[in-house]
Image 1: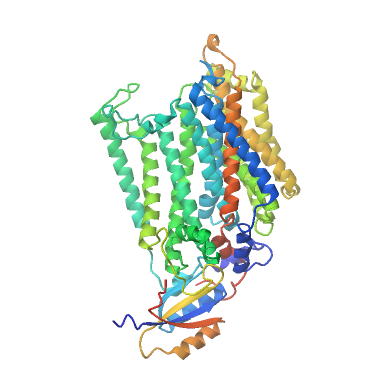
Image 2 (image 1 turned 180 degrees about the vertical axis):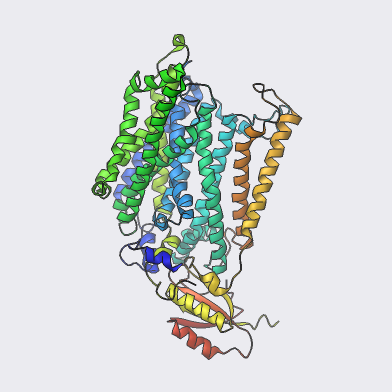
Length: 456
Length: 180
């Protein structure tokens, strides 16, 4: 126990905060009226959300024939967006669960926001398969309920059914994890509010938490158990997403490297999104003492690591294709790099493999403007990764007679923008109504009040 | 009836090392520790208080196995017995293909069940009214609550011990004022 603190050379939270100051600093963000910047950002995001809502309404009423799909390219923008958003969510679980099991105490400053991001990203992701069903009002048919058709059960051998269960479980567990992690903080807010509506709401949500250590002890156990369950869960979710492709016989999809490749890519893209959001939040909400160089440094190193894994996977795919002796597989990869979608392929390689190598340099890692720009690149690159995998494999498969081109329709682009609108709107509401930093956890990593008497 | 007359001695502390020291000493001196209130999970306090392990991991394991078992049975029953449908010539009991959904349902049962067990076990229910033992234990103060077990309870010694650990406030309570 004691050694843990000896090894911790620099304090995680700067400014020699006391627990009382942590409460004051974080709750200050929830008091008062939102700033002009917040309103501007909120209106912009809400407008995007509105645009998306109109587009979704239109494609549901008209049918998904309004997309740019054709007989050959039957999956494109929609599934790209789905995989992209699911991937974004994975960094939240990595930070809240995997890093918890690895005792990475720096996670306490970013886990609340990262978990919120997970939940919002999964919500955005869920929209796409729902629309893609064509008749979204029958979405509940995915659930094996006792129906009037026999009952005719769902096909448990189908990866699309696995996906439904994976995403539903992932959303439920992430939401539970997030909420349980927030209960002590909700009690803190409850106890500093004056009687009124807000206090009543907080009292309701805080579940009567009173800081009893007997409860804390079990709370910590629950937290650890959920982290232990969420870790294999997050790996299973993107593995299953990759099986949507890998269980088919399309060249470029039918490969065993997909699960680890997708999981690494998911964490990579999610880390980029967490950094993008945290760099903005840190600046605009003045959280420099809580999200320090140390936190950002650790996250950029994680990006460098996962980005390099993704680069390795790109290389391995090419090697496997060349070594397989399968001409369809070989053609698909040459077509990716040199065919009509070469521009997308090289955008992906530049953003995901080449530019993140700059993170090897400490000077780059500590220049937050450059880090911010690089994270935007990674967000773009990872979106293109999914686009490249899906579209280039489909548009030229076995029969040259059935080759086709694909370009998205305006409706598809509006839906993608709408999903960003939903994500950002929810995130902006989150920073106004919920403590962005897990106070109850940050108080436990402060450098204060922990002298000779510590340990047991 | 003597329940009504129970008396409690409450010490309020400002630092983690003080609450740890005071709790440990109180236990060594043989006082009955009712509970400790803290704004965050102070590591090592469970040893200082002498608390045992919780049975929650066992509940998680049982629920996980239950979820997985039910799911495998249901997949087998619906696919191979109730209405077998030939999908691509695959065997009726495609056990390997049932694995992903079984895993997800196991995690769902175990995770949600653990939280429900925790919430019920600790009586943390939406909207439950609570009264803090003393202001500030969800903010920056720590409180140690001892029970004055009988007339032999040495209050002076307890207060002296509290003072050694920089106590900021000592309060005496009778049961009528609920402790939680």
